[in-house]
Length: 166
Image (cartoon, rainbow, N blue to C red; front, top):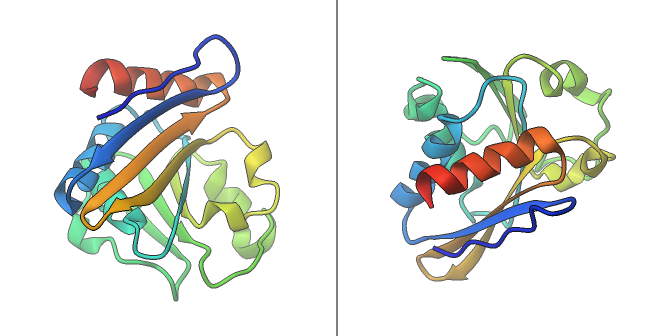
């Protein structure tokens, strides 16, 4: 596990390594344990890197069955109701999308947790307050997961994640 932080200014960052899908899910569960509702999670990573796997762990941490979490590539938005509503949104099939497309605004700014795969395809997304979860290949069975946030609310979540689990 590696940690990097720049708490003094804008962005708080935490980087960990996951050696298995089980570990990736575990980090999703850990993050979910710190959520209070109303968070926006922007997941970024190559196809097959582990975004949906991470969300399965997140769902479990929100008292949902991870078996119910499927890659919503064809439905684009799946709603799940656990400790908080989880809105699992996958923008893979779209080149670019705006807040007003697909009724995204109501999901992204709700009392639930919005987890958006392919977040980089959301036009203006990087200007919003969100917690970025970037998952990248670091080897055959190794993933690098980078949590980062510039706004204070999501940065506090990363700080708690570091204190509690790093």
